[in-house]
Length: 252
Image 1: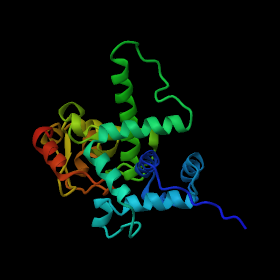
Image 2: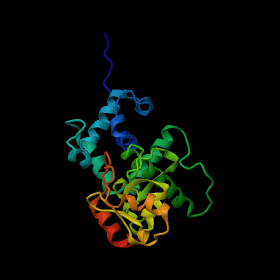
Image 3: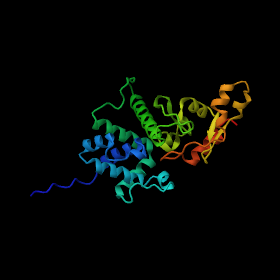
Image 4: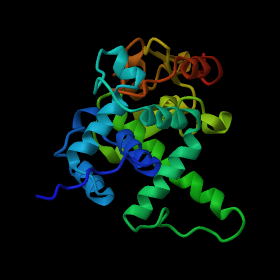
């Protein structure tokens, strides 16, 4: 009886696609019955079990999961370590490359909206694509819930940059530079009315309490002073990014 040849080793493109998916689905949904895992497996000619194990192997490398004694798989391949390091060494480049591969795999356009023609179009496409990747990765890291209030309506959730987009080009796409906040608290965080310490505690600016006549402000902002945010399941905020926000964005 003829035997079915084993599938060849994972290619770099396949590993990049797998890591892209690892970033976008909550850790608790990494299993072979997940429709997104099934879809990727079919597209690259692998089994859902193989893809889910590959994502679990990436999880073993995630410092956030190690800190919680959750390691996913207990072993993996050297190639997975290399892809992990490559992403973490240049999120902007690898996020875009992974999104480009995913778009080609499903025969869709990277950006569906109309963009102006010219020399800046390619740069605009990269920005839009990486913004989408950043949002997907940050929201998945917080299980699609606001880390402050627990709000779970996707349309009202934002992937907030800790170090502002304009201040650190190298970490614009790094999920560890993000918090999942609802639209109101995202705006308050962005303009420095609230901050989050490296210990994950919330601080509210005195500018909020100074406006004593604003009852709504006290209800939605001041009440959270001293509260702790809900930790991310992975890609936990880099403490150095939080310190930057404390020192340079927060309005004491």
